[in-house]
Length: 103
Image 1 (tube, rainbow, N blue to C red):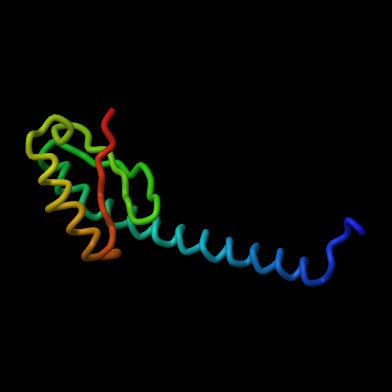
Image 2: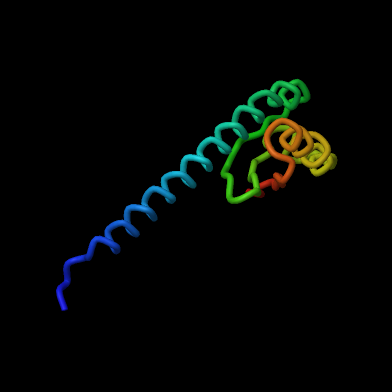
């Protein structure tokens, strides 16, 4: 048996490559939307002496880091869920969940 791929295997490899690129592009678009939304709400946090940093997007989970006054604030979880997560669900995707990365 030859080690060369037949035309069917080559087509399948090409299909998988195209599908991977489509998924990767969709993830990039979603990540860009999340970053833009976070940039839009940063001034509100900065007005109170805090800030927010985007860390990563995995599936529907957005990981951020609250810094400054937000990092030690007892209301930070409420800010995260009722402020940041609510805004991202409204402006980007209703299925997003936001988590704070602890240092």
